[in-house]
Structures are given as structure tokens and as C-alpha cells.
Length: 72
Image (tube, rainbow, N blue to C red; front, side, top):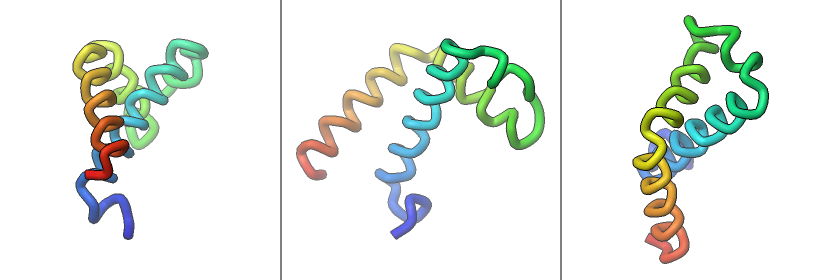
């Protein structure tokens, strides 16, 4: 089943995308900061979400991890 049809998998993919983009922007900002518009601008936007909403993203990652570990 695709992640688009399973809500929990879709949330997991979005959280991983946000966390990955934020990490890459912290490690090598020139990669993410080049494109701010268009399709590649999505990665810049995800990095901004990860930076500005860091406590909420972290909490969402912890909740998702607990849900996966419990099998729900």
C-alpha cells in the first residue's frame, strides 16, 4: 500500500522529510538555499518548518515513534 493511502504512513513521510531537510540545511545550507521557488522550493519550506517549529516537530516525531513501537 502506498504512503498516500495510509494516513499514518503519510504523516511519517512528512515528518521524515521535514527532519531530513532541516538536517541537510544545517549541515550544508547551500544545497537547500539555492532553490526557494518551484518544486525544489518544497525542501526549503520543509527546512524552515523544521527550524521554526522545532519543539512541535520533535514532539510529533516522539509520538510517531511511540505509535510505531506499540503497533498502532
